[in-house]
Image (tube, rainbow, N blue to C red; front, side, top):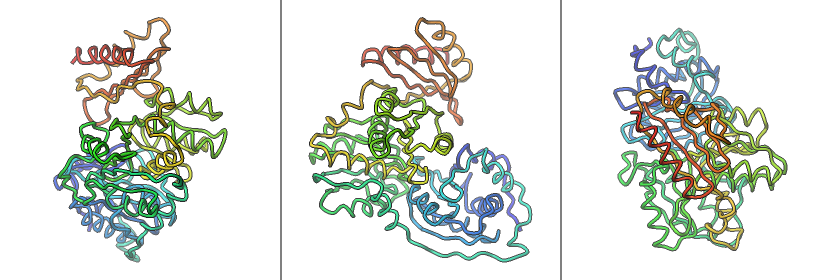
Length: 459
């Protein structure tokens, strides 16, 4: 018999790309089981791969999902503790649809479900997630009630995952000292397996590798500068060549250079793009509209084809499939690789950075200097009651200025030869997100402060 769930709550936690809510009031094992049944029906899966992160509620919810999936007639392969990109690897490597229990960088009280089809093809509201949600709310009969119930088996894919990543980005050259801040998240599980294969080529200085879903040291959200302070201090303390920070499910990676300075994800995008273009000259590189204009400039200079997209992994992956792009990068620290089933992997991005650094006779800051052409503000959020009205007012204000172009691909982008900014509404909160860039630091700061004042003056 199907469990009864509150339709309003189900609609609230099924987001554009995944399921996300607080435990246990919004998401629990009852919902996970119902989602497992619905997922198998919509995807048509005969076998499903399931992984989970280190949050206290994750193992129970993964097991409940497996019960629902087997009731719907599918077999389930449990890979246990995993990073999200490890789950994507399992989906691609084994050729089965995959499901990951994680709330990524969200605080401890949250959990969630990320789902994909076989070979890590994403599922969003427009590509199956809405149908899964509707079946969770109003389930119909499933094969398990009248037919065969599936079986649950276990399989460890961590070693195969690590070997595959290193086959895509081998690290050779001079030895490196690397500080890794796992933030008590899943990089504490994957980093030893991956970097341990490098032997004495990489000396790892671990920080917060203990898997702890209560996040006792800092939130596992490295896009927030405050969460990088411990890493910055440790890099300077031990004289490291580089610092790596991962979010809770380790699908995002951020760098700190040897001086303790945060490296923009746009800069890492440019570096990896250059490496991938060296491997495949003339290839297409995807970048979202918030990455620095240095990215498409560099791609063009290297003979590649830059393609601009909206923010969000479903848009990136769809455009990668359409264009056969070799690589895609986002301002948020997500990096996508064609040879990794077009999925994002923080660890693979980290290996590219280590490979580039080990093969150079320069420091990281020197190596990255050619990719850092324009100062950027980083993302700045402002609470705004009427997001559309503010965006319209900004377009009216700036759109008529000399030398200015605007577009609405995603929010509002305003471009000038000397500067650019984008303002995007949040999909889930009453926030406007500002990203600004300038030809130099004073230009960027002037535009950032000017636009921010206009946004906040209308609250």
